[in-house]
Image (tube, rainbow, N blue to C red):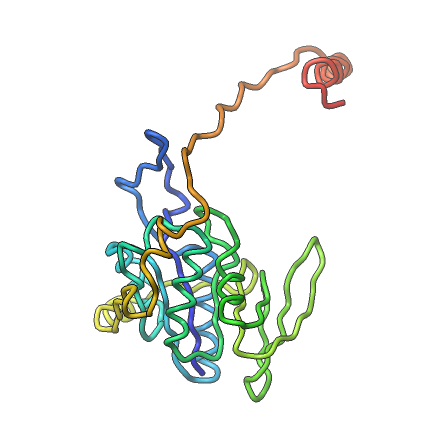
Length: 261
């Protein structure tokens, strides 16, 4: 069984984001695999451990993304494809999906996994767009995957509005993963050392047969003009007096100043 996992390089969730001149300052940032993608990597590894096969990572990003890809290989993935071309950079969800889909058309797979969204932009669009471009079914925000005996279909459980859906899909399909699906493992020392020898293929626009003027910043339908931090949170207010007096004053403030009651 061949499982492909789409991963994205994102700033560490513990990083304090700073903004300068309308852009995010990337100097000194620690980069990781997007946490939702990590659930996809872990699920792929578990499937292969159970049924045998191969796990291939696919990542679009600059040269520096190699380090992030190696982290995925250290977890146990077998190989990776790095979509590494300046023409791919600066795009939006539509151009990212276009590049990923073009690369996937050159690959063999039984299942495609990826996080339900990336934690940097939170668009939650790439997975479903890739499925549409490939003409594949997709199931989103999955917390459980059960393959049929012949591996030609999957039964997926997903959480929706406080409830759960059970959906069945034929394979191959695109399934997006979220928290609750599994508990991602940590890389072992053996895995970290072995990752240095695992193959990473570098593919450019010419390798996947795509016009470089239609992807990246040139092909994007969305342009980010400016980024601003949220307004500073106002300081809190302490209401003096006993409980009855404070409660009465609180109601007055909520009604007259905050205007929420």
